[in-house]
Length: 436
Image 1 (cartoon, rainbow, N blue to C red):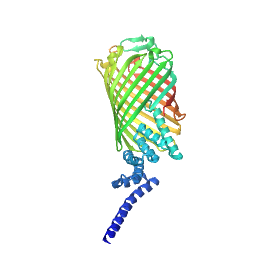
Image 2: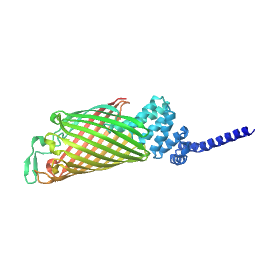
Image 3: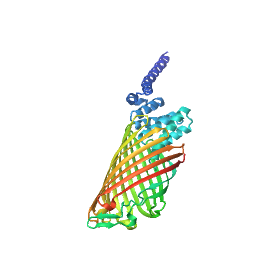
Image 4: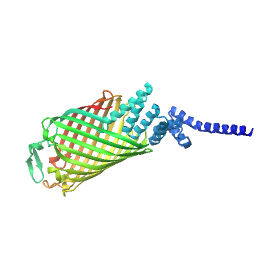
């Protein structure tokens, strides 16, 4: 009799404990379903004892992402997937967390895995819309797609960044004639590019990554000014809560007319924080060794720079995103040529909109002031440049692999020394194929 009583008491105690756990878990679910994610997050955060229960972690993860705590949401949903690896809904929400953190590469990988698991048709449509959004983002960041090739053609009104006329007035020298090669030249061009990256997760929130980019611009007549670039980067990223840290080693080389002009080897780092699902900030730091060859060898320098960027998504039908940025950099010439060293102060404002599912439009305005460290040895005056650039682009996703993009760039460099003043207009149409 006593043993039966103890069993009954133990059963009642267990039932009471399960009911007590179920109540806040059910409340979190109901609040999420009602669109009250902030309240759901606050309630769920008070019940750490429920973590590890898939039903609770699923809704708490969604609430955390919606409430601007994407890092916690990713960790909660990762616990769900550890037990339910084929749960396409949890994996889609997991990817949405990485989207909120700005890690488009990992988000795309998880969305593609969710599609492979055979989700219901209505969920597949949502997953594909997220993939399209990532592609629109990546079309504006040429080396961020997983693997792509691109070709295009356009016109450049000042392929050599030359001055507008054959005669210049210079301090101490008066009016002088400009060499033909320094007068602006218009030319048509063809462009080829390829790039991609790979990410290898090490643990929840930590990964290794690598990326490469190749680009070449072939002029129709000014072949001696053809440009080719190649770059490699590799590093690690760590996500904790709403914060993400990235550190990478980078190397790039620029060729002009087939001859190597410059090589950059450096270290890039950035810290980004998701303030909420609609906004975030990023602080970046860069250091590089700039190695020039031939007649440009006196331009060898050490570069260091800092940048701060703010991103804001505005809730509306076209999903506009506004970005604001400021930067500072310093090039310290290492060849005893202070006239080639400079400090750079920059600001940037841009916006992007998605008027339709397959269309993306964007524009940006940037300004950089360059203050040189010493007087020009020929002109006897210290150079100061005010460079402004306007960029606009329209992207159309043809299908899952093909996309088209039109680009326009307007640039104006107003220098205190007339030989360095120029304007430039560039327009291009490009076609990209992504390997899926």
